[in-house]
Image 1 (cartoon, rainbow, N blue to C red):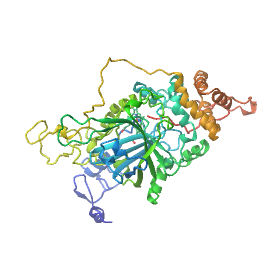
Image 2 (image 1 turned 90 degrees about the vertical axis):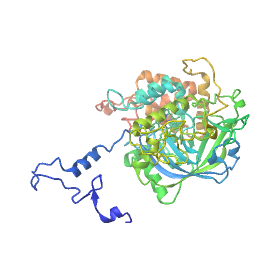
Image 3 (image 1 turned 30 degrees about the vertical axis):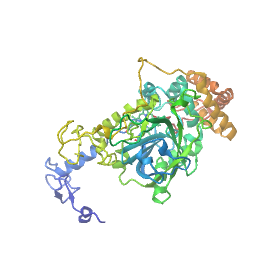
Image 4 (image 1 turned 135 degrees about the vertical axis):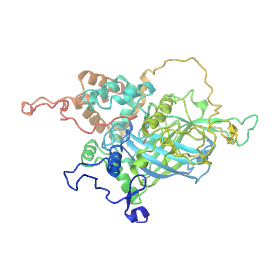
Length: 538
Ligand code: HEM
C-alpha cells in the first residue's frame, strides 16, 4: 500500500488525534457488565457517523450505477460545429471527459436492475465552458407532455399510500386515463423494457434541445452577428448491439442477481471491454417545424427518421469504474439546466418542467453547495460567481479566495460581453397566459400503431402481447382493465383482441382452488403476482 495513513495502521478521531483501540469502548470496569462513559469520543463519533450515513435517495432513478469515460467528436456524417458554438464540439477528434450514471426509474435504491422499466442514462461532460448534462432515457419518447401530470405519473407507479405496496391497478388506472402514455408503453412492454444489461440498449434525448451558433465574442461587435439556431434530438446507438431479455429471463435475473446490470457494467470495464455508443443527431431548422407532421416539442412523439434522418457525429466510451460509489455515483447530481454556450433548451414542456425539478432535487438531496462536490464541480476556470457564498458544506472555490460578494465591485471585474449563452435572439416570446393542458387526439395513436405493425413484421408481437397480458392479469380491477383495452383498441383492434384473449381465464377446474393471498393472487392463468414490476420513467 502506498498511502502513508494506511501504511502506519494508525486510526484517528475526526480531528486527527491517534487512538489505540478503535473498536474498544471506555467502560467502568474492564468487563462486559460495565457501563459506558460519555467521554468515549471515539465510540460516540463512529456510531454517530454510521447512523448519519444515509442521505435521501433520489425520488426517481434511486437505483443506479456509475462509470467514467469520454465523448469524442467523430463527425462521421456531418460537421456538428456548423450548428453550434459549443467548444467541445468544435473539431473532429476533440475529446471530453465525462461521468455517467445509469439507472432504473421507479424502484427504490435497493431494487432490482432487471425489472420492466425505462432506463435512465445520465452523462456529465466536463467541458472547458462548463459542465453539460445529458439526462436521457432508453426509450425515444416520454409518456406525458404536461409537466403538471408528473407527480401523479410517478405516484401511480410507486407504493400505494395505504398499503405501502406497489399496485398494478394504480399503474393501469393512470395510464388508461392518460392515453398519450401508450406510445412509450409500446416500447416498455416490448422486451426492450428488460434489456440484457445497461450496455445493450440505445439511448435517446427524448426532449428537443436547441443548438445555437453565433461565434463566441470576446469583444462586443455592433451590430451583433445574426444567431442561427436549430432544434435537435439525440440518439446514442449501442455498439454492443441491442439485446433484450424475455420476461421469464428477466424475472429469473431479478431473483438471482438484483444488481446484475450494475455488476455487468463494472465487470466489463474491469476486463477492458469498454462499452461504447455512437452518437447521432436529428436536426431541424426553425422554418421546418410549422409544416412538420408532429409537434417537434411534444416528447410523446418521435421525429420520423424518414423525414429527419439520424446523422452520426460522436462516440461515447466508458473506460473507468468509479472509485467511490457514494462519493461519485450517489453524490453526482445531473440537471438538464446545466447547459453550455451553443447548447440550449427548447420550449418542450417536459424539458421546461425538468429545468425546475433537478435543481431543487439536488438542493434537497445534497445541499445548496452540491455543485462544489468534486464529482459535480466545474473547472475553476469555468465556474465563477462570488455572490453565491456560504451555505452548508461550503468550500470557498474562488481564486483568489478573498473577493467581494457583490457586483459590480472594486477588484471583481464583470464583463457581460464575454459570454453569449443566455442572450438568445431565437427566443422572443409574448402572449397571453393560458392555463393549458394537452388533449389526446386520434393522431396520438398513429405512432403506437406503427410500432405495433413493426412488431408484427419483426415477429416480436407475441412477446409484447404476453408482457402486457401478464401485467394486466395481475389484480387490475375490471373497470381499469376495460379502459386499458379500450386504449389498445384505438391503437389497433387486433392488438386489443389479442391482449384480451391472453388474459381471459381458462375454464375453472375445482381442483385448482387454493386460498387467495391478499393482494397477491393473479386473477388469470398467469398465476400469482409477479415481482418484475417496473415503471415507465421520470
Ligand atoms: C416533468 C418531467 C420530469 C421530471 C419532473 C423529472 C424529475 C426528476 C427528478 C426529481 C430526478 C431526481 C434527481 C436527483 O435527485 O438528483 C430525476 C432523475 C432523472 N431523470 Fe427525470 N424527470 C422528468 C422527466 C425525465 C425525462 C424526460 C428524462 C429523460 C429524457 C429523465 C431522465 C432522468 C434521469 C436519467 C434521471 C437520473 C439522473 C441520475 O442518475 O442522477 N427525466 N428526474
